[in-house]
Amino acid sequence: MIELLEKFTAGFGPAGEESLISSIIRDEIEEYCDELKTDNLGNLIAIKRGKSENKIMLAAHMDEIGIMITHIDDDGFLRFTPIGGVNAGILRHKKFVFADGTLGTIGVEKLDSIKDLKLEKLFLDIGAADKDRAEKQVKVGDSAVYQKNFHNTSSRIIANSLDDRAGCALLTGLLRDLEKPAHDIYFVFTAQEEVGTRGAGTAAYGIEPDLALAVDVTGTGDTPEAHTMDVKLGEGAAIKVMDRGSISHPGIKKFLVKLAEEAEIPYQYEVLEFGATDARAIQLSRSGIPSGTLSIPCRYIHSPAEMLDIEDFKACSSLLKEFVNSEQIDEFI
Ligand code: CO
Ligand code: ZN
Image (cartoon, rainbow, N blue to C red; front, top):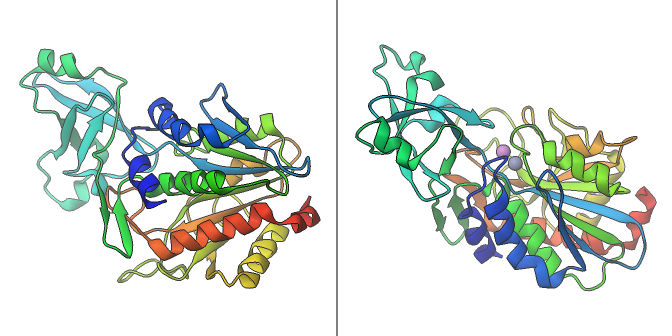
């Protein structure tokens, strides 16, 4: 599954432009599912038929954060607006790449104080000598994402876009291993999560699942002077209790804990004081859908050097497998 992670983090896919990453995922799952479709918002939906007609939706977002060009000046420098949650401190001097491979560095205007470091002080420099030459490569409205990089330290992965290609890799691995699940499983690779969990909302409305689980990364509190948070890298799969977008269905939370304990899978409870996952949109779809989130602990989220622990990743994979194969899930439907 680490190969999938490397392949998926290398795919271009800022929110709203998921077609390239979608086709990469499609190639990996096509022969393993019973049905495959893309909806009008760009969600990629793979169905694996199971023993009962109950519908379980698993969601991992395939879009990633990025920047969108708003203006090109006479000297060929590009101004931009963020796509999703990025700030000036993270972006400064990072490399960004467009769908066609055009690369640029984020430069910054002269600052009197580091406190003046704001997004409007930044520009993207693609090395073009003037506006005409810049416009041959990039147009207003084009999007760019962090330059791809992937490193395996043997215990941890450092890469861009683990949020949420790690979730996409987990779902793909699960789909490929699955024989005949207990219920119909809808594997949804959602679009536009980073701009407000938009794809998951339309997907959930269309599928009308009996129960749903988002699979995404979450932050940790285990680095020096970090914001207080109990989640630690290497301590296992994180079972979300609450974030700013959703309160997990208590039955799903308890069920995940029970499965983890029975199968001796390391787990930890997660309360995230900022951020949200696709569970927010799914839970609020139709007349309400019982939803929860299984989280992969991750440091430095939304930077080009996010970090996850391979054992945590495996724990999430094992727990997900227990979840879709359990008949007892009926108790929550
Ligand atoms: Co994110
Ligand atoms: Zn995410």
